[in-house]
Image 1 (tube, rainbow, N blue to C red):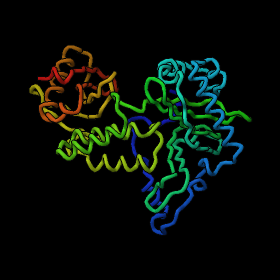
Image 2: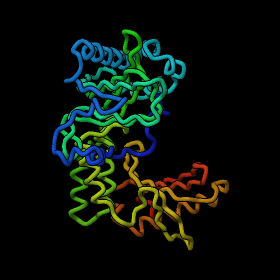
Image 3: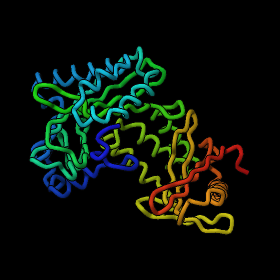
Image 4: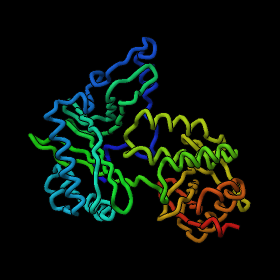
Length: 349
């Protein structure tokens, strides 16, 4: 919702903590190493913080949650850093959109993290390694944050698990220290469910699909599990690293990933698929297929191509009918503009 230039773009992905361990020789010595002293950017876990600082951070996060639950966007704006207050429309909309899940709800605050970006210029790519890392990378209490173009300063990452409203959500608040105050610098509400189900449900279904050799359904459901298991896509933990590994091990070889395209023949044409991923639309879980086109100006033609791609995809992978409510085809031109078409699975003949 804010600090867009700071965050990584794209779907959630694993932070390469295992590679970091190997580069710095942690694996070779087999020691547990605290990552907070390794870089000009540093991170403290809640256990490492001064008790007074932790108390102030936590009370600030709870206060901003209370404002959110009351729909008091005026007070949130007043307590934001200047860069956020001057462009507050996104947060204002987020508070309004999530009001049914915030109003009357209860919030449990997870242990916060304190990030320090040193120097005089924004960090092109800030890698904040929080807590203790072992020979294979992350441990139970560790976390990694990847933040791009982050201005120098002290930032707190606070995550609240919100329940009792319409749907359970996580509310991640990024706070920045300004003098003696902790001002709001980022606001990230995220549903803990997709189409009415949580990460545990999708994990179980992924295992069931894998057991039935429905490898494409299993892989796409593991992607959904990972997305539901991390509150913000610039954070990685031991749990999400394991989920990422499980997803990668289940990845079918005929799916487009890591910039690789896959060809799909449909309607007498060959289409270059660039992405396939799950997406929640209202109360449904759909599968999205993105493919490359020269332009999208002829909407009638692109619509027909979209329909052809949808039908060809389901013909090639009929297992998708068991796992998704519909298919969304999106034709993407070289500039990134796209044109999408949704077809419910029941209407795909």
